[in-house]
Image 1 (cartoon, rainbow, N blue to C red):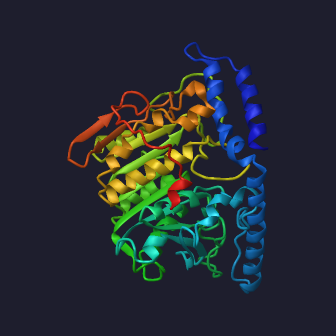
Image 2: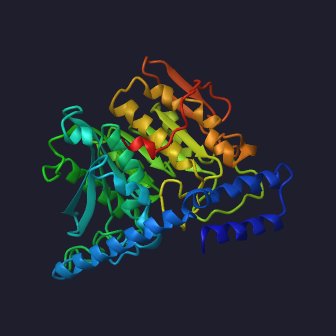
Image 3: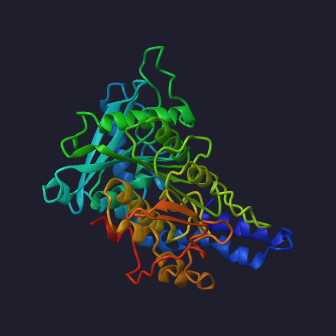
Length: 424
């Protein structure tokens, strides 16, 4: 079902639902309609769809050739192994290599003996020696249910442009990585199926091991003393677990959402949205703090944390899948903004990071206001609170309950931000 048909069906369900007394169905209808913005504003364009089709053909031919020449040693079996349809990712990201930076493909074996495919991302400045001699590193883990690494090229390119060495990879059983482990009986079935928390945690740990090892083609530039991790969905759960147990990790970002069952150890940015995996309209007001249970645990432990909840967004704000998964338009831009500023604060000690994290720009975003005049460009959820509890660069503690309204944010009169422009 297309995003447009899904929207129509769910709006119909909303119209039939009996609202609670403190709930406004018209406001909810407008809020829920935001989940179609990415498709209607970007992906419905014929040129966009033509670019997707072009990359589909290239990727399909590539994986068929790979499997044919691998001597029976490779098999992904993934829905997104060929990069067709929604698996193609954002075609606008494919201009990074050469023009904006360098993308180096890597293949390594995980603990199960499965071939894992990924990429190392660097800016042109880093590649040509115009940047720092060593770079902080970031490892990105995908979501589950066949989510491929190409859905997360947006953040890899932005972070590379900001002076990071970035690694993306396909978890075993997803994308172009093998579905099964070594052919011996002991390892063959390990790591299968992909949708398992333990398996995701192990693959993230193995990715960090490769990234920080000598086989990484960018090893000479990597500063192993500064490492961040970020993940989406089941990858967010894995990031939460790994930050608690792996001393190599210095900062973490969980996109939908922080796991509140783990022990807080490093600064954590959590991001989430009004709607979840199967977007469904509300018929009453939800618990305003239910998206920030992880944040509350971090705050109680005295570890810096921040939770951003996107208005009218879905679970797919962080995974760019063309013509299929519903999402708002500006959620991905705010995700790039906050993720970069968070990593800059804790890996780079960037003095501008606090101002960016506490900017008021997302309370009145002109591009969002043009699409949703009733919302006046405020990207923060009005259902859920977006709290902050951090220590500023000067040592001052800063805490507030809601970025949408109660936080004393700093005036930002800069140009509207776009992750497309922030790739170099």
